[in-house]
Length: 194
Ligand code: GTP
Ligand code: MG
View 1: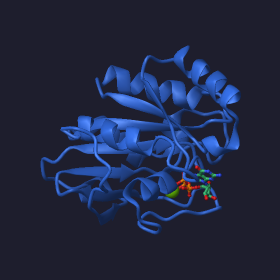
View 2: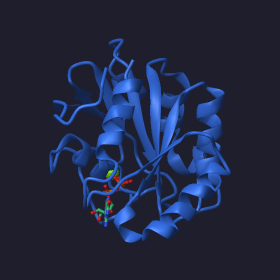
View 3: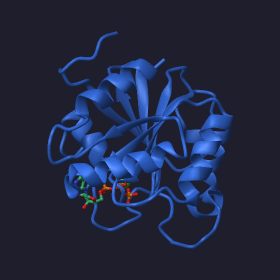
View 4: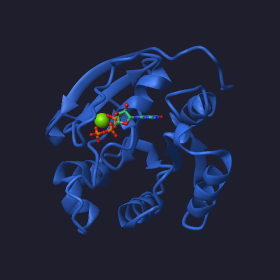
């Protein structure tokens, strides 16, 4: 499938607060993971061209459930709760909650992931653990540097280079403030939604 400019259709399906509520049909899931406040919900809204589909908040830790959005009736995007909110130096598992952990570990429909990283932050333990986890599980993922409107080109290149020292995953730059990375992101999703 070639990349396109038209927006995919998207519908909010449900918020899962227990594993039993996760949709059971065989459509693939692409998860959006990242530190609290990194811009997961904002990216989803920008991607789908809808201002209020996913809830955006200035208060970190707003998204508490696994939020399922059905895209073009063919795959789900899952807006995961943010990790690292407590800022405690503990494992992703503890900081992020047992639900996310169990879901990622047991759901066979997770086909790919976007790991969001604020372009002004360096990858930390949580990101490294997450990337290791995806690699171990053979889940293809891309690192999305978010809020790229906050840095100049040189600093962005430095940030991207730092990520390449930790992982060979694709790196996509994204900002909600301009169209940067939007098309690339859509084409990445289309390629991995199977
Ligand atoms: P949680 O659900 O709490 O984990 O947060 P989240 O990762 O979903 O972040 P959210 O989308 O709610 O955005 C957090 C804050 O960052 C909001 O104030 C957004 O307006 C802001 N934000 C998100 N993306 C961008 C961006 O590309 N540029 C700028 N300048 N601000 C952004
Ligand atoms: Mg959110």
